[in-house]
Image (tube, rainbow, N blue to C red; front, side, top):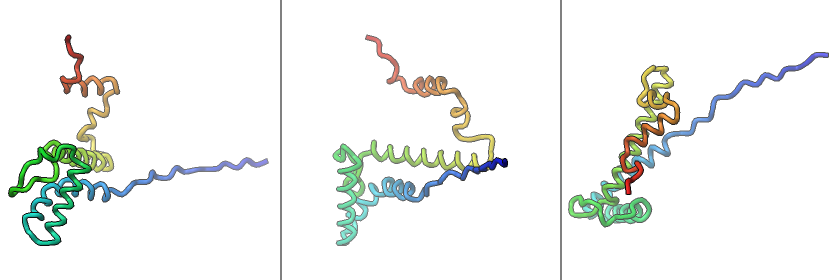
Length: 139
């Protein structure tokens, strides 16, 4: 009696397209600055689009739009803290893109390769030691 072996070759993992994330990051980065510029133009469609962008970003992204900085006399759509968070997302996207490119090129040095090579207790200790406000407080 012959035995049949089923050979199953694993397929490559599905890679999601990156353009939706990049488009969202561009909107979050440029939208707060473009909104007052559109309002300053005074053109009917551009000014209303700038006001709509300000209203949407202030309502759904930034919890404190009253603290936003002013550009040409008009408030930017989000406060400096939320815009800084968007810049942090851009930095993370850039680092992740570099790490993926270097990993695919089999380069030995990756931006955070040394950190990812540590065991998880060492990662936790190192990450929490950088933030003193996470340390236990003395009464």
